[in-house]
Amino acid sequence: MAATDAPSGDREATVLAESGLPVTIVTGFLGSGKTTLLNHILTNNQGVKTAVLVNEFGEIGIDNDLIVSSSDGMVELNNGCVCCTINRDLVEAVRRILEREAPVDYLIVETTGLADPLPVALTFLGTELRERTQLDVIVTVVDCANFSLDLFNSEAAYSQIAYGDITILNKTDLVDSATIASLETRIRQTKEGARLLRAQQAHVPLPLILGIGAFDAERDWRAQTPAAHAEHAHGHLANDGFVSLTFQSDRPFSLRQFQSFLDNELPESVFRGKGILWFDESPQRHIFHLSGKRFSLEDSEWQGERQNQLVLIGQDLDREWLQQRLEQCLK
Image (tube, rainbow, N blue to C red):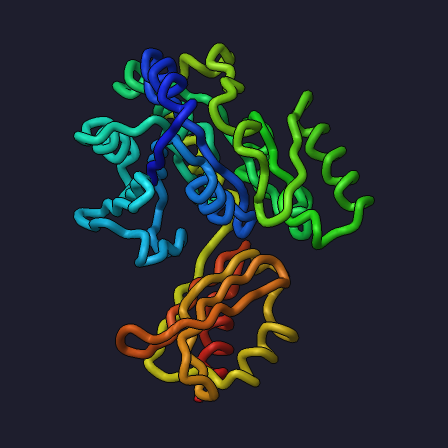
């Protein structure tokens, strides 16, 4: 989770605090750019102490130079921000934020790429958090180059659009205007009156997505319990057929063979990949991100023992075949 400070923010924070800590839920499918949006908020939301709840610190990629202290799943930054992991218990994670000696002005919760945002929203409406927080807005991030409701055939993807108060069409620089227009039409067919923002690198004006009071707490499903919806949402994910493959090895990949695998053999049903890669041809550590057919490698120095750690996520994957092919890419 993360937090920051505010000039005109002092008065605004006081007003907001009177009605409970304002909360934004950031959701979106695999590889849409949620983490990029969180980094944008932490870097630019000056004057507002913002707490960010994430599933993994590694996803945020916090610069060590910014860290003031780190303990028990919580990292404090020198700009007043605080990052905290959810660790499977959202209510407890939020409670830890609310009970800190140094209070925060705003809370952002990131969902996983396969999550239905509704159970998360209901957690703030139907538990002890209802009296201490105020759900402000659900922001959905969409990867314009890869998102397709037909392709994913996913209830989670539909829910992320349907329950989003604002949808950010991210990575518009990677597609043409006709593709963007077609996607906007499909989203408006899924959610009547959808509020859409176009963006590159998830850079949007923060006043358009934070502290705007866009969430409608009077929806018909308000009285439904979080437990019931959580069970319902988990069923969606199981029915969607999404599975993940975790691959680890203490041997390096052959760069040429791994590249060939990505270019020629990676199934189209693999939507997301991430990991730390070790190539025989390189002395560096490589941070790997895959979204659709696009992938990137960021170089860094090894801090510990060298090994490959890779996760692939997709629909109806043949995990045994993928495991064998990845093993064949090793030196």
